[in-house]
Image (cartoon, rainbow, N blue to C red):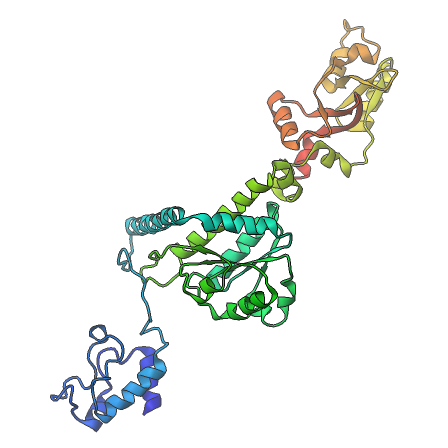
Length: 409
């Protein structure tokens, strides 16, 4: 009988009344003498155990089953306040209204977070700056997912960091937590049991802990050397259960730490580029020297006194659509393009030497300049290539097709 009742509780069959078979077998009780609703007041009208007031045998059995089944989803221990009740919708207008409501709730949560920041935030920055080791970010569930992003952001912006899963920490990965490190532990409730071993280890090894939680009296709040307390705010979830506003606040607080540390360290665009060599963002921060480093193609060049045929041959062999012109000292003096070559072939041109056919100067770049500058210059002038100079001597050439082929465009 107990198994049947538990099975019924699991699927929600007992929300209004017990099964008919139980009612017929046990008769009326002190709560419902008329036997119309034996031991089954509506769940919404009862706080904790709806059968505690009844002394009949069936109520005692229900009481026992209720205590066993208490952790199930039908009796949440605490529901966060809700700003609005959402119902099933089938129109785009309703979907947009819900989306705007969610964004409004989370915007209010971020405003509350900003107002709550105080001296503890500066203390957290100071703690990270003064400890030379890694920032070890830990959290489980949604806090863990946000923690992974925070660790990645810190590592890519000048603060060495990695994510440590608390469960793995309990099974040997605590060896990663060494003196000089700072642990950033995240739990909105502050009561995640998976963090217990990590917090206990940090306390014994004197590893400082920065806690991100809503409660200073929680397990995490009490175990933190620096507490970044987040405000209590309703979740945007209509049931008040799914982490929404809380994860948004956690993510924003992690970004605030990241940017504040960047400013404290004087982290530059060049520093950022050196840590992001891949992707379009990283490539845009490459220098001309980075682009030329892996290129062994010979640079097409001719002497200033070279004749028409050597110029044509150099352009054909170089496959860049141009050739650079250098003087007797090897210094760059100009460029001959396909267009210059066609103009030199006109009957009235009378151009026999390279220095007579060339465009003096032309567009050139330096090794330390950014590839983004090169792309902007080539696009603005509507030209295909430019020579790279070092001490006025050409050391390479950049062609727009090569930039396109290597993913810079």
